[in-house]
Image (cartoon, rainbow, N blue to C red; front, side, top):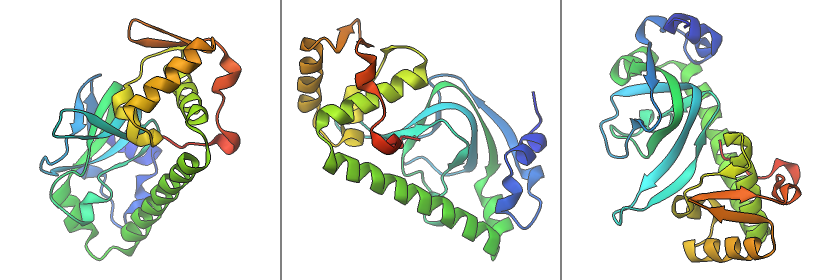
Length: 222
């Protein structure tokens, strides 16, 4: 396995910092099901997600989850929070074994005080996130629910490497801009049309052509 310093270089993290912060970062592996961070918990560690798969969600008082997206590609966890508050905005949970680089938040803040390179790079990352979320919102407003559900299920099939996918529909309501009741009705209609089959908590995609991405690659979930 690569060392933390090697991964720091491989991920190009030096582009974020004027100083060399390799010594601050350590390897932080997470098994499937583990939380990388939880909403409202003290923001003690600044993580860089290296590889794996994780879901980003907001827990509700009712016990339900609102899914915001996924981590499948390298990116920071806490890039918005690090400048604003001492707790995490959202929860991040590993859906597969995942690896992060982590550094103490306070040490990073001391190191980047007055560092224009850091603020510029983080600002660019946040701008891309705003653009992605805006694009997803535009799709939710422009496309019928059936197209959005099919695009989402197709994305899950590609990520899970199987046409039999496991999804949390309650959590996906925010991502797809629809209520749980409407999602269930849409799935029932797709099942009646022979496009999919629900079995044992999973959804088997039968008409694969129907689950292609929306034009222009559509949603960006990660």
